[in-house]
Length: 113
Length: 120
Image (tube, rainbow over all chains, first blue to last red; front, top):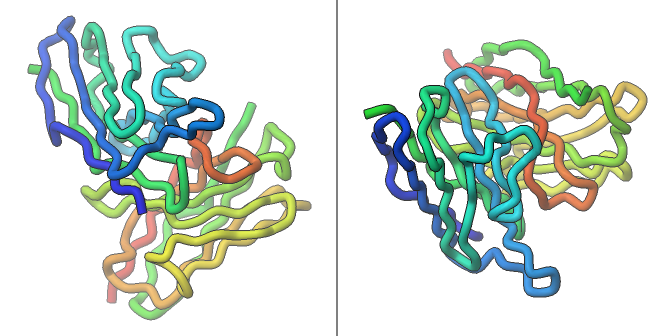
């Protein structure tokens, strides 16, 4: 099974500053035949289901602000929020969908400093 | 618009079973898979399994093998997740989510979640 590990577990960033969340998979999630990384990022606010932000490691979901970006390949990935807004306070999860069982990271709690 | 609407909260005793429904609307039900994911208090999201809504084939996480059954009723555009032999550790919010027809994908649409509480 692929294990997803995020860092840090929590993060406090000032408004307008950059926030960076990392995700590592225990094996590569890059599918060589199509050169896609099977990695997604979600945002979850209290009492709500997760919201898809990024898929294929770097493709922004429709309607997601462009301050959110994803990067990385293989086993190491990053979610970056370029200029933190108050509404970005949430828990962020990475997910691998390369193979079954589908797996999520433990989450990173993002707060305002 | 795409919607996944789940059934309401449940309270069950240890050893009992629970069945949660997920009604889909706004798209052709059989052209997307349905996945079930749970989230225990303060824990990460945990994938439970999925169903190919076209042919009814299923695949489950080994963590739930033998205890979880996912079904669908195409005429009702509804998927169901039944979890048996409940224990206190099964207390969680259970979500359904729409996935791609081939199964392994990410989830652009989620149900609102169903809280299942297991308590004596």
